[in-house]
Image (cartoon, rainbow, N blue to C red; front, side, top):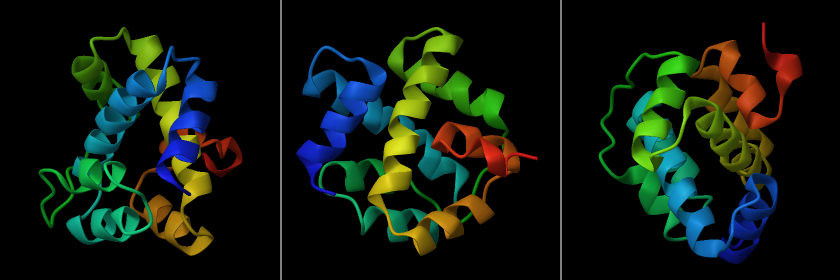
Length: 130
């Protein structure tokens, strides 16, 4: 998926004012995601995304993934975007459901194996939540 298509989809889902806002939210959500997955997985995901979205996944990655749940994920997104927790949930859903469509099915499955089932709903896959 090309940059403009990714951001257009995020903008539509998140009901953002413009591409700049969609980009800012996307970079924040992808940055938090990168700390929750291994460095290798972040690199694999980044290889399937256009610039500058790929850089958001690679910025500050380490080989080891941090372990935190959905609530902490949303707290971190809210902190980065200056949003309320409910808005951060909306933002994460807009970006992560677009990410799920933008990468290959195999890559998406590898990503989900690194996350607890509670994350699946943010990717638009609530049936995978346990």
